[in-house]
Every structure is written in structure tokens, then in C-alpha cells.
Amino acid sequence: MRSIDDLEVAGRRVLVRADLNVPLAVGGATPVITDDGRIRASVPTIATLAERGARVVVCAHLGRPKGAHYAERAAAGLSLGPVATRLGELLGRRVTFAPDVAGDTACDAARALADGDVAMVENLRFEPAETSKDDAERGALADRLAALAELYVGDGFGAVHRKHASVYDVPSRLPHAAGSLVLAEVGVLRRLTKSPDRPYVVVLGGAKPSDKLAVIGSLLDHADRVLIGGGMAYTFLKAQGHAVGNSLLQADQIPEVLRVLDEAARRGVEIVLPVDIVAATRFAADAEHEVVPATEIPADREGLDVGPRTRRLFAEKLADAKTVFWNGPVGVFEFPAFSAGTRDVADAISKVAGFTVVGGGDSAAAIRSFGMAPHAFSHISTGGGASLEFLEGRELPGLAALEEP
Ligand code: ADP
Ligand code: MG
Image 1 (tube, rainbow, N blue to C red):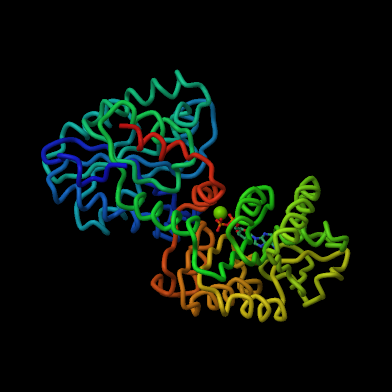
Image 2: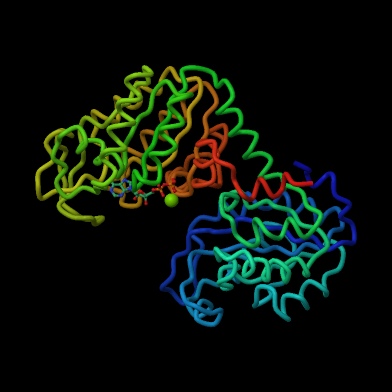
């Protein structure tokens, strides 16, 4: 893959596909960015290009606006405007914002750029074609996006697993290179798949097992231990024959869970499940709750965090690790009463003397919400889905497109 150092950018318009998909608190007069980690991670590539005299046009998506047409989607309020403002503050440069994706105002903004200037176009997903399964539809949007610039830089790691117009189709239309974020992320993930130092411990949490079972399957090739918490743990407990009350359950995944457990046993990979659970009366920050054995979750309760014995067990299983990959909070960390498990996992990983990688938007947001320093970990990935698919060994469309000459 070429890097931006291989591109002659001075005086030329460069379209940068960034990942600026930040969490927003809507409801107030103006939406508030609650975690700007992905914007910060996108700064180095954009700043370097601008310093080298490029005319930078940034494109990115935000959320999942719904509707059949541009206007309907734009009405949903997911404008990238506030993100452009924040990017400008972090860059220390003015970022002009075009209120459309690849229409007249976007073209005008791109043409008005002087060397070293930065513009951003509106949320790519206001254009239904961005995510279309139809090659021709995506291609037509890619033509318009490509017309904004002379060069393309793919730096939106969190989106490289998507076969979307701005990720997959534009690079085939312009001379292209990978941004520094994408190169850094790929470097870290390669290290996890090529002879990691042992013991290699993986912690998996998050909401749904269906998102993560495939990766567990391929991690069995590499990992020594897999600790499972979060919403996905209950499908594992259920598969082992325990009642899980009202906890999150994906019953259709039980056969796959059993297959994974069987495969792990055959290969001598240790799977560590919660032994106690913080069980709540309902899914709410102020729900009544108590600690119960993981094998005895009452019928009218749902597990929202791992209990204190599990927190100690997970910390012990992490203590001697030389390599750690963590994806997914082990509890509903957004509610303070159910954040202790995730906080303790983060804390235990920060103490590991080895190579520690955190993947996943919510896991990274959890770390920041605990006020932990990012350098307590070797690497915090900006892409949850993308890093998981990479570890699964799948070909990622956005990376494949950047690899093409
Ligand atoms: P990441 O973004 O780090 O990959 P996921 O998106 O897979 O993580 O999952 C994050 C979500 O999982 C969080 O919003 C968290 O509240 C939720 N979660 C964790 N544990 C539970 C649980 N026991 N029940 C319901 N949701 C949970
Ligand atoms: Mg997530």
C-alpha cells in the first residue's frame, strides 16, 4: 500500500475519506460531540497533507440517516457541520463546510481551496448511493466524488470493511494512497495475527454474539485464553444450560456457541465465562440490582454487568498476558451502576506489561469516560467492526481498493 509520502500533493486537490463517525448527544439546541476520539485520530493525515500544500477535501459519514432520498436523510439532523467545526479547532485551521456531498456547493468549496486549505463535505450517507449494493449506483456517486479532487487518500479505518462508494469505488478512479491512521491500524492488527507474544489473552464483550462469534472462531488459532463478558455472555451461559432471566439472549446463536466451545476445548484454548452477574430489574441507570451467581440469574432480572468475583477472575487471567486484544464493554458501562466490570477490565489491561490493543468504538469511549490516559494501552483502534473483520482474516474492501496500483 502506498502512503501519503508517495503522493505529490502540493497544489493538488486531495479527497480524504476519514472516519469521523463520533457519538452525538442530540436533543439540545445544537448536537454535542460526546467523544471526539475519531476526529483526533484523523488529524495527523489531514494536517500533514495541508502542511505539504495540498488542497484537502474531507469526506466522512455520520450515523445511519434513514430515508429514500437525500432530502429525507438530511432532515434527520445528522449533519457533519459540528464535526467540521471541531476538526477546525483541533487542526488550528479553518475548515470550510459544504452543505452537500458532491453537488454544486461541494464542487464550489473544492475549487475555492488555496494550497493548505481544508474543506469538508456533508455526511456521505445523505446520499443513498453511498451504501448501495448496486455497483452502478455507487459508481455514479463515486464519479461525482472523484470529480472533487485529483488524488484520493483512504484514512477512514473504521469504514474500510464497507463496500461503500467513498471507500471502495473512489480509489479506483483516482491515484490513491493510505493515510497514516489506516497504516498504523493495519500494522497493529498484523502484529496480533503474526506470532503474538504469549500468553495472548482476548477479552470480548459488547451487545450481540452474532457480531463476534466469527472472530472468536478465528482467534482460536492464535489466542491462549478468551474472556467473555457483556451482553454476549448470556448466550454462552444459556448454551451451557443455565437460566439467564431477561438478559440479552440470541437463542439462534446457541448452536454456533456450542461449536465454538467445543473447538476451543479441542484446541486447548481456555474460554472464561462470568461466574457472577450484577442482575437488574430493568434496563435503566437507576434500576434496582443485586449480585447473583452466573448460574442462577432470577427469571425477572437481566444481567447488566459482571460481578466482583468475575472482575477478580478476569484480572487474574490478564495478569500474566504478553498480548491482549479487547473488544466490547463487559457491562452497560454507560450506566455508572453497571460500569465497574468494564472499568476493572480496562484497569487490568492497562497494567499488562506487553502489547495491548483495544478495538471498538464503545470500548474506546468507555476508556475515555473513565478518564484513563490513552497511552495506558499500546493501541486504541478507531474501528471495531473493521478490526474484528481483519482479525477474522476477511478481505476488507477498502484496504483491497487501496492495495490496487
Ligand atoms: P464496541 O463498540 O466496543 O465494539 P459493541 O458495540 O459490541 O462494542 O457493544 C457495546 C455495547 O454493549 C455498549 O453500549 C454496552 O452498553 C452494551 N452491553 C454491554 N454489556 C451489556 C449487557 N449485559 N446487556 C446489554 N448491553 C450490554
Ligand atoms: Mg459499538
